[in-house]
Image (tube, rainbow, N blue to C red; front, side, top):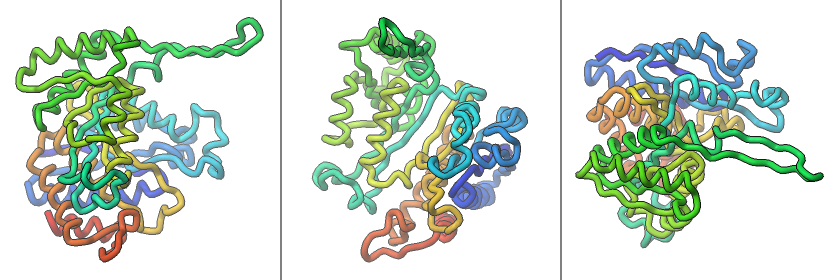
Amino acid sequence: MNKNIAVIKGDGIGPEIVDEAIKVLDAISQKYNHTFSYDYILMGGCSIDVCGTPLSDEAIEIAKKSDAVLLGSIGGDTTTSPWYKLEPSLRPEAGLLKMRKSLNLFANLRPAYLYNELKGACPLKEEITEGGFDMMIVRELTGGLYFGDRETKEIDGQMVAHDNLVYSENEIKRIAKRGFDIAMKRNKKVTSVDKANVLDSSRLWRKVVNEVSQDYPEVTLEHMLVDNCAMQLVKDPKQFDVILTENMFGDILSDEASMVTGSIGMLSSASLREDKLGMYEPSHGSAPDIAGKNVANPIATILSAAMMLRYSFDMDKEADNIEKAIEKVLEKGYRTIDIMSKGKEEVSCSRMGDLIVENL
C-alpha cells in the first residue's frame, strides 16, 4: 500500500522526535511491504523564520493533498522567543489553529493509557490503578465556546464580556458517530459527558447522542455530567472506554486524564475530519529547554504514528505491532530521562527509537 504523509517537524524537540517516528514507520513499511513517502512542510516558529508566517498557503495545499499529516511540536519559550513579540495571529500556535481549520479537523482523539511498567509515575493510589487503564477521549474540536461569537464592551461604566456556546445537530451527530465507531474497535462502551442539568446546548447534545446510539446496538451508552466525570477520572479511571464530549469539556478532561497517566511524554493524539485524513501529534509541547540535546521522549510521537496507521490507513495490525514493541522496550527497563526510575537504564531519544525498531 502506498501512502503520502505530510511531515511537520516544527520547533523545539519536534525534529528529534519526528525523526524517530519516521524511523519506526520506515521499519513498518519494510516489514509489511508498504510504501510511505514524505513531504516535509513548515509550520510554527520555523515557518515564521523562513516564510514570515506560521503557516503558508503552499504548506496547507501540500497537507490537503496528503493521506495524513504527522506533526512534532510547535512554539518556543513565550518569555524570550521573538515569535511571541508578534501579534497573536502571527505567532506559532496560530499556524496550528489555521491548519486544523483548513483541513476541517473536527474530532480530537486523546488516548490515556497507563503502562503497567510506569504505574509508579501515576499520582493515584496503587489500589485504584492496579491492572492499569485504557481510555480514549473523543473531543469535538471546531465548535462550542472556542468558536462562538464573543465580545467585550463597556456597559454602564463597567466592562462586560460574553462568549456564545453554540452547537448544531449535525456538529453533534458527526462527532458522536466518530466516538461510537471508535468504541466498536475497542470495548464497545461510550460515556457521553455534558452539563445537561444546566445548559441547553448539553440537552441537545444528549438528545442527538441518544439518537446516534440507536445505530450502534452493540455499544453501551451512559451519560455523565462533566463535574462527576472529572471526579470519576481520579476515583476510578478503569471504568472508562470512550469518553465523548464537546470542545471545552474535552479540553479540560483530556489534560486531567493525561496527568493521571503520570507522564505527558507518553501520550499521543489525533485530529480527524469526516474522511480518513487526520493530523497526528504528541500531546506535549516543544520543550525548548531540552531541544537539540537528544534526551526527549519520542514515544508519544511514535504512538501518534501508530494512530495514523490505525485511523487514517486502516493498518490495525501494523499499529498493534508498534504499540507492543513499545511495551516490550519498557518491560526490558529502558527509559528516557522524563520517565526514568531507580534500577532502569536511561537512554537517549535516538536510542529509544532504535530499541522500538528492534522490537517490532
